[in-house]
Length: 357
Ligand code: ADP
Ligand code: MG
Image 1: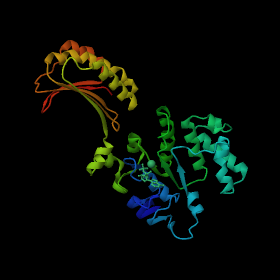
Image 2 (image 1 turned 30 degrees about the horizontal axis):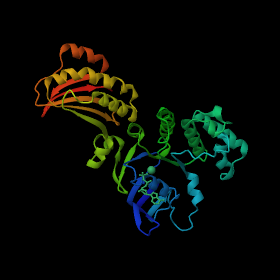
Image 3 (image 1 turned 180 degrees about the horizontal axis):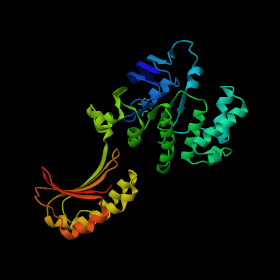
């Protein structure tokens, strides 16, 4: 359906210097594919989508869409715009129109659809994204998740062959991410061709047929979702997809500021959106501390969160220690607060690992 070869994009800065954002992007996209585009920020993901639908035309290379060279002189951009929809991070709804008017505006204006037919199709689309009851409301009265669902309905109203999503959930309150992803999931099931720039790793793994990992203006790795996430071929991809967030505390004795450690662990949990652990983790630390302080050796406490797998571990590590400092009473006390307790010797000493999630 889309064939991209040696695409490049260079921006000119006001001072005359240049910035090459897309270096050499080559890929084929078949009808029905759901492709997630992942990668660190600033690597050209948005630029690639904007180049594809000619919002920001590329400076080199070619794009063939449905057999037509869309970069050729004289190619009618409106033809491509009808076939390729785009959903933005910031919704971009028309604030002065109602929800339904937002959805039927383009079909009436550009597709010359009759108002009756546009309204009836528009209502069907609003029902599909679960927001028909707000048809006559103003976008200002909607939540972020509802606005994004309207933006998706508006995009579908043009009956596109392919939809580009640029971080559709990044501007949303975390509680509203799910409702938007479930609409996109439904479209994937129905066979819609989609390119989705996203930081939602679990979603990307579950919904995509293929994943592009972008870095430094190229598609650095391209493969089936399962392979890119579970067995990435290149080390940069691996570091990115298995990105593990952590916070480490080195404790050298009883004078350490344990209260500060408790609040930093709490902040960590809130920052990475694992609030259910934010109270339990500091409490567990407090319970564990006496047993470790008794050994009188430096202790490392570490909390890690893997976004992809959703794991949270609280680790207590002591070098040159051969046996667990936990006794039966303590084990019994902490068990109900953890999913699992793993006590093990490591190459450097001993580790007690509390699986929190
Ligand atoms: P991503 O979406 O992967 O985070 P972008 O495609 O938005 O990255 O941007 C890639 C790089 O291009 C960034 O360094 C950004 O500052 C630069 N860039 C994007 N748009 C413009 C522009 N209109 N003019 C100059 N530089 C730009
Ligand atoms: Mg971007």
